[in-house]
Length: 326
Image (cartoon, rainbow, N blue to C red; front, side, top):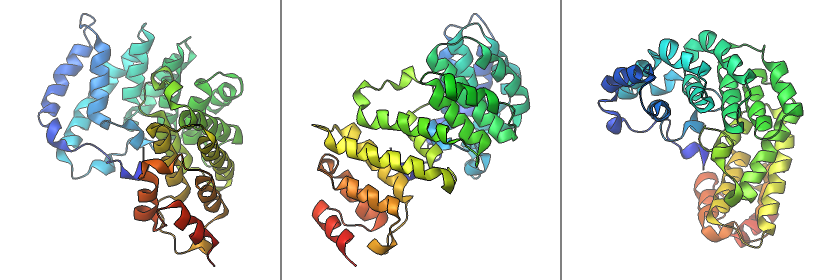
């Protein structure tokens, strides 16, 4: 779950031949008799975004990132050719999951935002099950943000104020995309609260009950990482408290430790530390929280990350001594 280690798109080897198959798959989507078109929508999204679509948050799909990757570019263009006539009409499909999966696929095609947004707004206005509604809200934010369209701000702020989870943090993701740098503090609170739940109790956290987008933790971390400085302090305070809660647990699973490492990545943003005096107050607070126990250290991943990425000591004792150094 370490953001900067994720590749932008998967290597093109396994996509070889996919651009030629896409028109046929899009044709199957137009036929109501095609069994389980939802699987086709999942597959087409995976072809476009790779195994982890959170890598594209919070900026949306940027075709500049696949320049020089001819197979990925060909796949993206082939799928994009079917978005207006094939994918967008499915946003009005009677089946909520089919409509939400169409929204997730359409979310990565900025050029079609003016056509897709009206259909997305109709979808968001429907009574939807929770994961499908959250998916639609996130897609709305990605495309409205890409189009510079702030007309959905009132809807999203109302959802943030009155909605239940996962609607609230999904609306917060959308607001971060649409209203940056003016994202309301309540949106930051919704994001950090959800991240705290993921990190401290991953065994009880069912991502598929939240949204169809992949890896909610990564999605939120990437959104938080692009917050303007004036909105980051509240997020930082919450993340420090999350680390402290992890250390206070009776035991920490590998998944918990892995997510704690991701919080450290958020704190340091891949910057080498020249000395303890160069730490920001937040970074110092994160390191002190990591020294509060040994739950996160036992996997060995945290020490390796601190050493390799940031030039920090890789054991608790050495880190404590380094923090006390002049």
